[in-house]
Image (tube, rainbow, N blue to C red):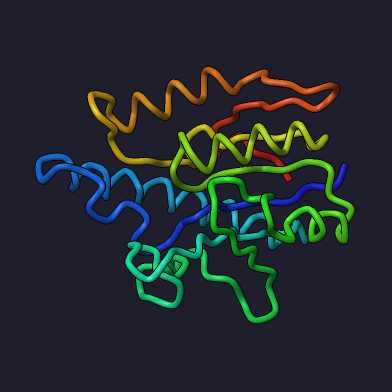
Length: 185
């Protein structure tokens, strides 16, 4: 089984201003913790010659992730090295109108380890779409993040998606939710 680590939208301004004044500090701290876990997995993947593919959202000029802006940059802890593949997207779906599937096919990948940002949008969509395309997915339980939404806290949203996605399948492909410390490459 050939694996790849796919890290979605871990960009400088991904959660900027998404929380209330009272909650933004907690959101930022939780994001930093998730990024630290992703960075450790990123280093581990590289040490084992497992492709690590960042997905970067290209926002419109007025968006917090406006293409080319400081907020659009991938966080330094996960910055791609020269020559690394970076997949650029403009929707929640990392496969929609991108070259992600081609990049995975070039490397013979059939299994994905997924983490990143915007749990209920980009991470959820990536996991479901990947399974429908035949990839087995390991969702990093403590390696994805979002902001509060309405009455739901980020931790409630993450817990919900971990519960809903664990065991989700399409044909033979399934999603398994695993803590970062238990991910094996």
